[in-house]
Length: 406
Figure 1: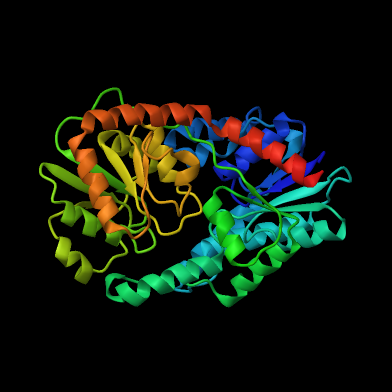
Figure 2: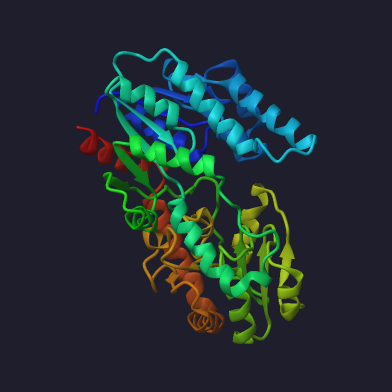
């Protein structure tokens, strides 16, 4: 492996880290993304000025030589405008996500590529045309899959809806047939698949995928979150951050919280609620709900909590796990996430089986009774985060790619 083209539609943190790591090792041919700029450029200085407003701006400035960076500014901007116009006039399609990813993929495939390239690295839903072009040039093709394979996700939803159909509002997000066909075609063209968790790797095995798979966990965002300085006082506080839905296991968390019957304790749910009023009626008064908080406020939430719960039934990773650990707040999660890649069970957090209400009850009661120990575990969680930042994660990915693409 000598020179990679990395392609991502909107400069996500994981793609930026991949490009920066390859650049650091002298293996980045070109990073093609949406609105982005190098630190030394005029646009870069403008975006850096806006960076205190949130990570969406910080992600748009990179310390990469401008010759290795290609901004498809107009493509991302136009795709966002198309999706906004469609939403304004009441059309369900194209979605913002689909517009950006498909348009970006097409634009990358039409660029003039250097003859020095040996492989391309592209992301699910934005790789088809890029891979076709790379295949025609006999280049390696790395497909980054950030979530479990769609067939496994569909089976999970089918299982939950059989028992909990009355608990949902809006139902699961159904992947349209054209998009499934696109995903299948991208995977068929891939030389290597890159994932962040063994749960996602197992989902590929369950879908009978036989392409080599790299498992490389995401880096902890230690520079975005400061650690709590002392043990929390006041009520024992349990936090859940993200979409509150069947897929995230919120219904099992609520069952466990009610069954645990903790005194002087609060459960705080932060994120859009996707459980029905009929279901939630049985838990009225037992939890607090905040539908939305900006990213800049989440650090305060993590630090104010004694423990974060993330009882997901199937996530490709779960960034909230890392964010909470960076803040010194340990996490209770499931093996069907990036939990096993981030947590040593019983040392800096806990892993409980998905759907296991009794295991959650036991863990919540134990945490409430041992708050001093929770603070100590939180310190260990932060220490673990500092040992695996985006730099370490990027270096490990470059090494893995070098082995697979040699």
